[in-house]
Image (cartoon, rainbow, N blue to C red; front, top):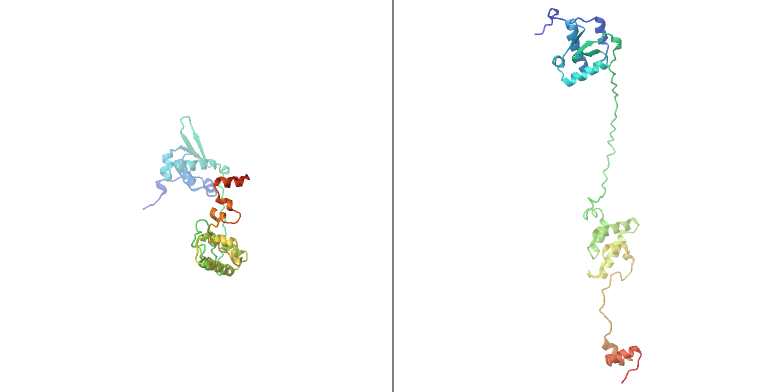
Length: 259
């Protein structure tokens, strides 16, 4: 059990110096090293002493790097005096002229008062925006019921994404979706189930073809009605075409045909 007694030894230090130490601000590591120097000097009735770093580390419990940092701090504060002789032996002593001491700067901690504002009535709204990553054929028409009605009645089911953009643009311009759907129904009836030569929905919408009364469906190409040479030769005035090719060439060149 610990029982410190003066008979076991004590450190004799002037009260004036001790009072000055009580009134100065020193960092933790520097305080520990300063007490070691006091113990090794005044504790042996000496004003200075050669103290190895290993002894300071052993008494303070600090690492060598921490001890060196604390010694530099004490020198800056002018609390201790260090001298080295030609053999590079370091001698430590306490600076008794305490009016020369420079205390550590007092740290100022600013307390910042924060106020958390919680609005329980208004919940934040999450806004979903379409990007290149999340725009697909499925979600682009998910909330557009009018376009679904149009797409169901239109005769050709191709180019859905492009048709959706054209449809939405027309709605923004003020065109009634019902008018477009009714026009698509008429167009489907005109096509009468034929899917070749039928416009894609995008082109039909961009051309505002629902405004056409009739004939919006593309007509299929007719058969070639160009008359043959025999049919031309049988027409009045084309008897020369029944002659030989030589006579026909002479006729075209304007020369007289020999019989």
